[in-house]
Image 1 (cartoon, rainbow, N blue to C red):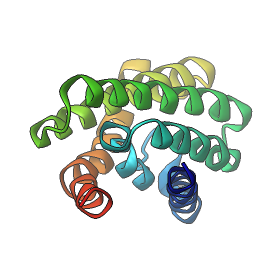
Image 2: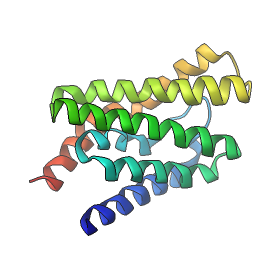
Image 3: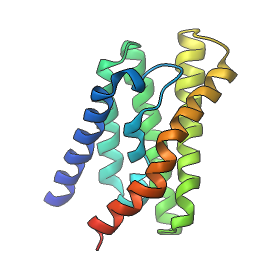
Image 4: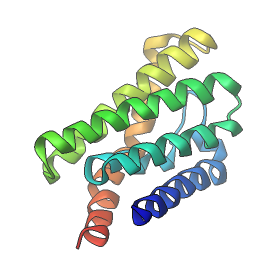
Length: 160
């Protein structure tokens, strides 16, 4: 139990640090949130990473130019894809070939919540379908390398 709490704190801290340190890349219609390379973690780690990523997003989004809207919508977005990743992991077990699919699912969810809801409808930053596509592509730029490189490496270290 203590190990899970420590791992969760580390995941949240890494997520927050990456968002804050790379602030210009982390927010807006053209964003590559490098911290989202961690988004497939619930697929391999379970509930502690669901909670860690959700907490990390809530804290990191305090620095968002979109204020409370991004804190709420971004946090619900992360909670949504994290739970889905967790369920996929429970249903199928670890299958390396599923990791890119998990990354695509995450990116679609982020595109919908952030591109369409937050930027398209709440902030009217452009056409929702174009914002969906921009946010989806930016998120894929972070989650695909995370799914193909970072997550398997973490799995090897944590579950050797």
